[in-house]
Length: 413
Image 1: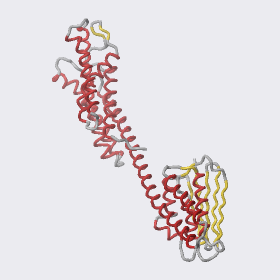
Image 2: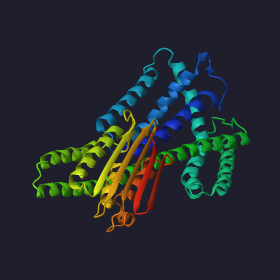
Image 3: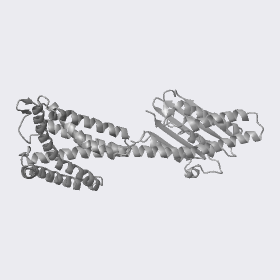
Image 4: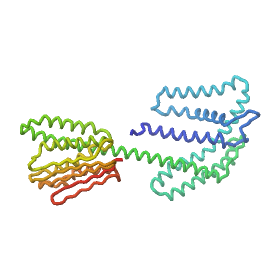
């Protein structure tokens, strides 16, 4: 999944959309700064008229800001500006050219502007409280886990914003706009509750946004880590299998061509078929068969016996690529020596559950656990299991009487 390309512009658009909706709601249903009702001198003004005019004014106010976005195509900017100019002209044309009922249109516009201005002033304290909460309180307290201090400060901010909103309409507006006779439509405690509601909604939205960004970051981290692990695995496979071909070629074995073909199929799978996050489990099992077949070509059959036992119907099941193969490789890496022994790999699949078990002798010259400290092998598998199948797998090791065993159980939902 790709991260949003222009994330800052997307966030700004969400903020604007939120406040446009808020403006429309209050301007359509709750604005009563002047006379009640949407009827003026016989002219019926419905909430659709208010909604229409409100969005025209908002569009006019916001249009110049589109030129601040550098990555928006110039023709898009020109198109939006042209549409805005046309809307302004369309609404002003009847007034200036004295079309019928122009007086009614003028009254509607004047009445609307009074309401729009009322709603605009009403939002000043709310917008201030919301962004003080987002930019200071959430960052300084809530994001740091100081929930109690955040709650006290947020409540205090809501009280101050509510009281200022009430004071703005009852004391200050008359000094600025003496002809409008604005009064507060809400009581102080109602304004405090409204402010708390806005702060609560935006806080939840911010926390959800931050959580989503965290999921994206974690997903990218997982993908990068898996890519690094695969980069470690692939050369290791190639190195071991080239040794197999070298051993056959040095003996002049006629099977060398067939083994090279097998290795070609093997590498094609490792390099190309494993590019997706999930592959068919059947393919992973087939490549294990190919790998075991390659190993049989290079070992001394009189010393090392190989048993591969596969049970179950693997069709329809998916698994992360190159998850089982390192465990199979581990058997041959640490189980082939001068002493006789048996390498055994058991694969069993029941609906939604895979059981993968290996047993190999511990060669005297090696310690399999210490050799994995370099990050290749079992430790890679552990990391990938923790990343890809958290709480859905069980991986256990056992070392007893010169025998090393691994058991992996995965729930493949």
